[in-house]
Image 1: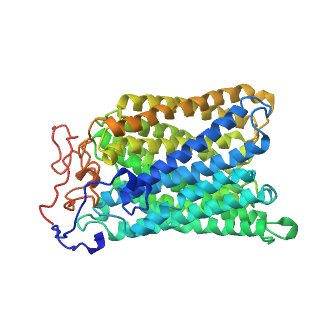
Image 2: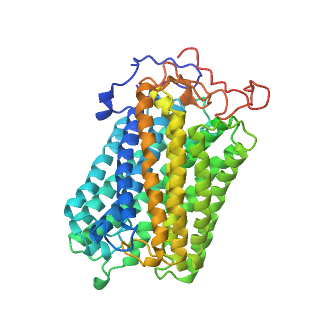
Image 3: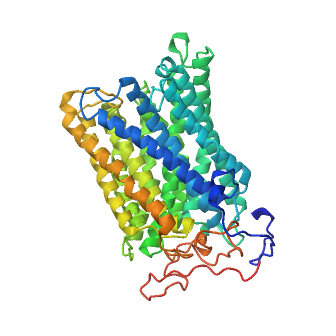
Length: 561
């Protein structure tokens, strides 16, 4: 029975059904339609792709430790460069943050037994592994070598079979994203328990709602651009061939109309994770709930009007540079609202420096630094000066690695007890955090100087004057790679032998913590009833210690259904 069939209109639910306690391990390798199984399938699968993309990055940094191409063949370097970026964005951050956390948490946070369309949900996941295998298989044909942007005419003259596989991989991943987004929107609109109003929705759900709308608007545009490129490569058309009257710049418009909002597809769910982790581990109501919720929608809207700042050097007329400089700077406003709200929440809170909270604070530091360099790149004069230099590489790694990956780790440490029923080891978690923070900054911070001094990106050879800075970046990359070791050991060991978590180890107030850890197959024996806001620490009678940040009191379940 689906949530849509549950009688509504009262706080008492009378559905009768059979609930099983838990899935077996082999159920996670099948076409399972349970949202929790699918969420974990996303997280594990995409983490494997993250390790593959990370190994490619280490190989490239090893090559860049010296100015000459003495470790990787230049063509293989180009293939690693292309697939590293593609894997990290389309096979790791986007599916992990939306598909992984979104699938696992959204139904639990709204009191639903599953997503609105469970079979469609499973189908969306099972498009991801073939998409990744297509990328890996492209190496048997030389590997796609035109970079993750794959601008024509370069993408039309290098390794055509591999480039076609790259395109088909992205089309599969994009289709998966569209199916998942439809499911999230319908689920959030139709499947909430009747007692949960929109202004009682956890901020992670608001973030997933905004992300899904953005994906539904922008992803089809990328599919059109990739489809036309595929025809140019394989069927003799000339949509993007200048010698036959094609428009190269049109591809750039189609690509960036999706790919800049893709930054928000990656970061909005992470913002949602931050809004759950910070108040719980600071023991304090979130500051500016409505401002954070509405700023997600504002980022979704404004994010659709900033793509041209990637094309300031592509013959963009001055009036467009002015318009898109302004729109790019405006998107910093709702983003700043979130940052200030999280800082205000931390201010005066009873902070527990757990691994989840450390990664959340680390994200704040990294993302603010990345945001400041982003503001400089959003203005045409600076962007033209440093375009296609390592300054750009430094910026988007601070935003995407510092923002997204730190957020994913914060989410894993926060919800691991809910997913497995066991706590992660905090000592190993803190070692993981320290190595990640040091490695990330040692790798990406010196790249700002490389860019300002003029070192171009996407090259395997460079001027020897940049060698010493590249050595520092390479050392940082090795530390960053090693930082995953304590995490992997921690995840496997804790899953088997970690301390048992109980239903609500953090004393959180959102609905997912009102059921067992891990949840039973249909989430609750008795559907929960929302009696207060998700962050009402010290409010509405939830003060237990008299200092304003009382111990959490979870929502009372209904007596019967």
